[in-house]
Image: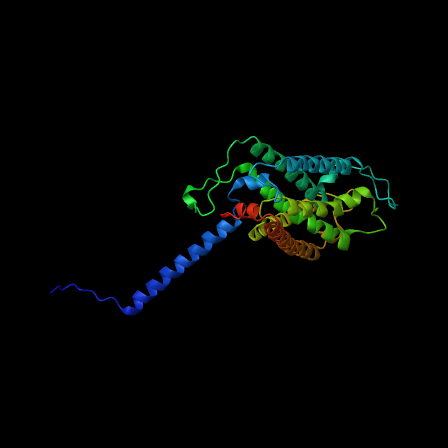
Length: 307
C-alpha cells in the first residue's frame, strides 16, 4: 500500500474547475470581441463591387460611379477651401483670413475623410478589375481560420475610412443644424448645404450601393475619431489657437474656457456617433435584405463568413 497517498478535498477540485471554466469563457469572449472589431472580411473582392451587380469582377457602371463620386467630392472640398470668407453679417474688427484654419473644423475633417474613402474605393476597384481570378470558396465549403488569407491592407484601409466617414457625416449634419448653425452669421448657400447636408446624403447613397458590410462593433472607430477631435480642440485651445475670426473656441459649444460644458459636448458627440453607426448598420442590413429578394443568387455569394 502506498504510504504517500494525498487526498485532494472535493472543494479544492471544484474551485479549480470553476476557475478554469471562467478563464476559458473570458478567453472566448476576448477572441470574439477581437474578431468583431478587426477589419477582416471574406471574400475581400466585395469591397470592389456593388450590391446590385452580377459576377465577382467590378461592374463597369460601378467603376464609373466611383470616379464620379471621387471627382465630385474632390471639387466640393477644393471649393470649400478656396471660397472661404468671413460671415456675411460679421461686424467685428478687421480680420486677416487664414486659409489654413480650414483644417481645424470638424466638418472639414469629416469631408476630408469622405474624399479619402472615395479615393481608396477607386484604388480597390482598379485592383480587382485588373485581377484575372478570384479565390472564392464554394457555398458549402467552410475554410478554417488558419487557412484564410488576410484581407488586403488597401481593402482594410478603405473599409475603415468609409466607416468613419459615414459616422462623421451623419453626426456633423445633425450637430451643425441643431447646435452650431446660427442664421445671423452662417449663410445658407450651395457650398454650405453640400458640406453640411450633401455629405450625409452621399454616404447614405454609398451605404445603399456598395457591397461590403457594416459591422456593428466598428462603432468604436467613429467614436474614437470624435474623441480624437475633442483632444485636438483642447490642445489647439491650450496653445492659444483661435477660430477664423479670432475667437478662442473653434465652436461655441466646444469652448475649453468652460471645460465642463466642453467635455459634456465631446461625450455627447461620442454617444451620438454610436447611434449614427447603428443607423448605418440598419441601412446596410436593409440593403442586403432588398438585394436578397431582387437578386437572390448574388446575395448568397456575398453572405460568406465575415471573420
